[in-house]
Length: 67
Image (cartoon, rainbow, N blue to C red; front, side, top):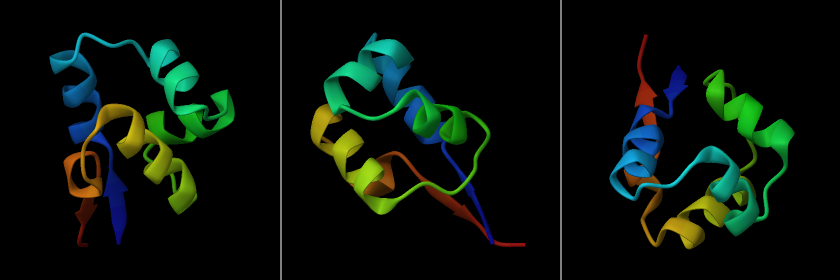
């Protein structure tokens, strides 16, 4: 299985927020953001921090792609 963070990028556009702003508000590392940009696995706590910063649920930012 693979993951896609396309929903996250669309949500950032809707909220008129940049990736840099998200890094600061969610207090995540630039390394974690780079992994998100490549649709790589990240720790659950990173996803939770993003959800808290964006006031959303985890299904609003990630999609599981079944192969």
